[in-house]
Length: 148
Image 1: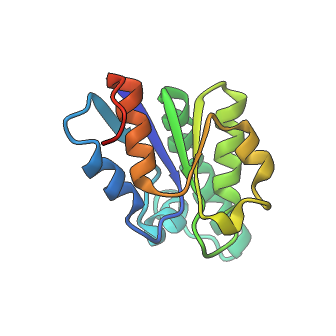
Image 2: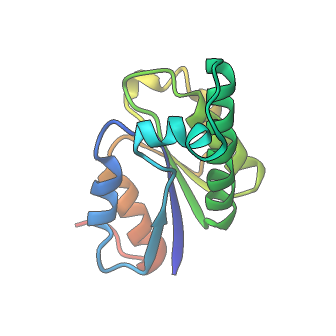
Image 3: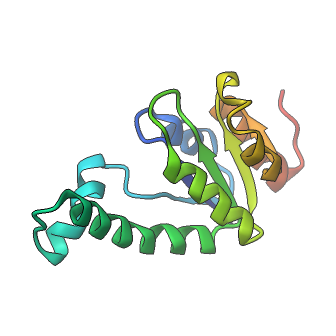
């Protein structure tokens, strides 16, 4: 069973596309909490309210880091998606963390991000533009089968 951690952008259905495309393969998926409000508010919901937004965010980030570190550490492959919107510092951090742990890293982003992510891309074993390419890599890794 190949364990894949799906990190990064949460505003599109790229994770669902990969999971659906990988049906029938011996692969399990994990990811951060993708409910934006739950992710932002988990710290204060569990540990108590914070009047200062900095500490509100800090509590959430630290609790989310427990899940993220565990997911990346347990993964055989880490896929990090950079979407078209927002500055996704957390995705870049996850990619760096995965690379530092020696994880097989697949980066997923459009051509507009190629220059900005050149260092991240250089750490990856594959750089893809479409979720289907990630599925094709997983299929090849598990079965040796090429697309088509």
